[in-house]
Image (cartoon, rainbow, N blue to C red; front, side):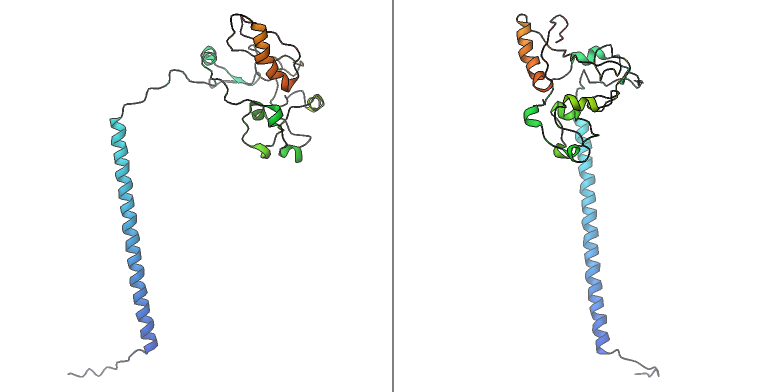
Length: 229
């Protein structure tokens, strides 16, 4: 063997063991990364295949029939004086309204909320609770009870008990929040079907008794020709 006259140094055993451990760890991490990369590629391919199948299925299925009627809030023009949208679909909306799913029971639903603790003298009453559909419960920032007469007097006349802004005139359809120039004490319930006979008794049992439990209405009258009570 030919001599090169070069010095050869052998590494210490401790360093050799470290180098060996490093190589093994590097190979293990490389294998893990390869497995992870292959798995991600496989998942992406499966997602693409699933999307492709869904698109093909959508092409095969017929288009669903759209509803003939829809509840339209109003056109883009908003009347700030009356607090409503200008709409030309009033008759369409009235003829195809759905009955309410929830109803407030003042005896069962009354309870304390955040308003009774933090905003006792400044909060309004919950409009959703009055409909029986408040999802906040005890966390609601409004009162969950029927307002008393003294509480109504403390509220600014420019707003109703729910905090909605009133306007200078009543709406022509007698809806909305009312006028701040007059004290309104009449409640109109409309858009219901009247029976051919015994209108007064049935309307009193079906409408007045339900409303009287919360508002204290002592007298009510019905008009079967206008479907108004």
